[in-house]
Length: 97
Image (cartoon, rainbow, N blue to C red):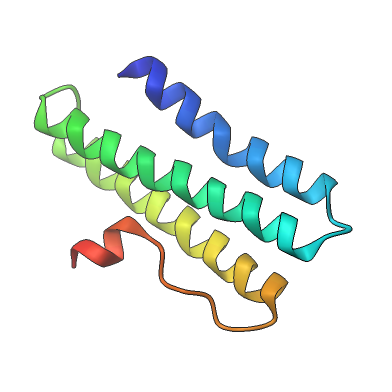
């Protein structure tokens, strides 16, 4: 699980960077931002699993979950600005509430 968390967490900035490098196409940039949100949502699930399996405590879980929820919100806002319209809610935590 640790390796999967490393891959997912690194995938977020890597997708943003790769998408930005292709900034000639707004559609392509948005596609990479959506992949970054997918990786952030994957991290949210892995953080939940880590708590459920007893690898991390409630305090660490709450802090990490809040940080990844914020990352998803920031990415969603960026997608909204890139698209020039309101973005769809794609954050895992908001779906659970």
